[in-house]
Length: 418
Image (cartoon, rainbow, N blue to C red; front, side, top):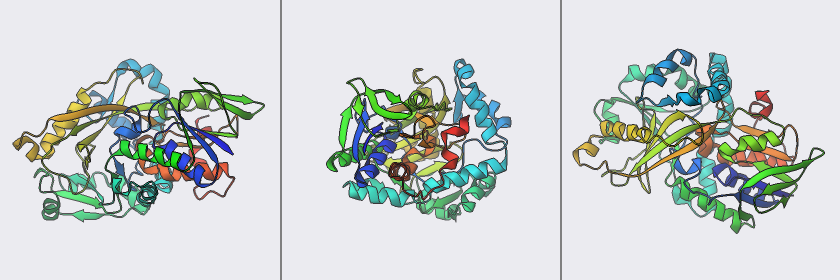
């Protein structure tokens, strides 16, 4: 078949790779260059973590939400002017974490996408000729003490229940592994199966080139709509004219909502705006990516420098960036790593803001569109887009080829928003 994949981010490129592997003709369409700064996959925290099964919305969150939103230096903030538009999403978000049973179901669904993510990325990077961009050194969560770790008992129980293994590090072992970490962190949890990407933007660009090398077509154009008649897809409309095709995959990130509506699905999809800052000359390299539990931020040594990524800002998609969110990440890093203060190496080489395409329940939208079986959804991956992209691509290719699925996709159906 001829399949048009709309969106050349990490999910779209992985879909295109798997579709080409199965012998389909593929046109990968995006208005911008793959791997560019416009994409969420460019600026993410670079983590490829089987442990990311814990949803954002957890039991008791509604009690803490006002405090989070009033804390100007916290990891979660809301622009109040956007509240009316965000209200339906926020209500569903709170509901998604309203019980332990709900978050257990979410964790199981996420685990099916994440359990073998590092191995899938390593294999994919090798085939694309960029094996050096995937590092499998583990991921570390740093806590003030064991009591702080115990305070997140439900999150770690969800990980354990979904076969995520870890090793606990007492203060001496933590200090030996991370001598640059501030002394206030006295307990660590190492997830040895975790991995990270040394250059997310470069990785996506390399995967897009791999698609072309395998016979796929890359097209720089904005997809403006779907030509559907009698329940069948005829073409994908673009600014340069229609592309006739048999199937289409919507993997356009935050821009997927309007296209999905044309295919019969009104989904709750909003931007969890994330930020990062990069310190090009930190003076040290982290031997393993670190998440200081008190900052909820991923600190990762990449080819471009020390990447400090995090924050969830709920705001209108086209609202200007609030660069104070990036400054918060830098300020926290100064407290977490004394060498940055001592050596005066906290100069910010770059800052970034992007749009995590997020559903309120933390699960992506994967599967056939309600109004046209020729259109498949592959968007809304939120915080797990990088990690879950290879298996999402495989799922899409199997659906196009009418092959048996290895993942239960019922939790990812667009019809759950009805």
